[in-house]
Length: 142
Image (tube, rainbow, N blue to C red):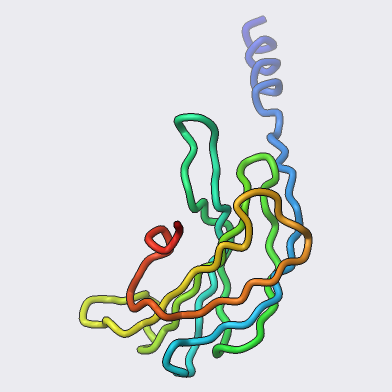
């Protein structure tokens, strides 16, 4: 008898949580303030997530590398019911260590573009200028 109840509770308690996502294609251009070439890490954030007193900015969604500044295309899936808006952040890896501004490095430029703070269309333009040395994503969000 106890085994049957445990199995029933286990099966009912393991019901999957379904996340509804919206596919978004980001088309844009990356430029650096000083024209330097080199790989750029692009990171996509939802501008806002949570409700009421638990609402917070800059929820990380996805990241990708591009080989050099210029035109780019990036596809992401935004969790529709868990946040809103879209922010694009990037930084240029000038020393090849894939770490943003490790100790002793102070010239890796970064930048952010607020694409939307509310609804996000399926295709967006995300032009990004990297002009702030060693600044993280949350410090660049207004």
